[in-house]
Image (tube, rainbow, N blue to C red):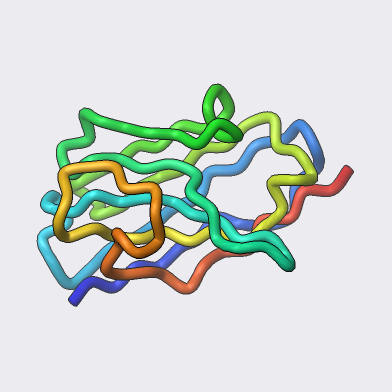
Length: 125
């Protein structure tokens, strides 16, 4: 079992930045690939970014490329998503997910085994 808890969401103005955190427990963190997804109101969940268990491989959606940075601190069992130049269309609930099977970096919900409950990010214009 893996427990994931997201934090760091909130209300931010357009052009601002946030750092989201995903704290994991219950299993060797260094063996997990971790991803961030988001779900905007009325829309499906979409991939944002992922990082391999080694931290050496990352992947980003087109919307996150150039504005997002995913990283991990194995000593703290935490993955971070730094997002800059936020836009109103980034408003969503952001979820982190853990993949027990792959090195990296699935983009589909079904490829992930455990999910957190999400943290709300609201970007005002």
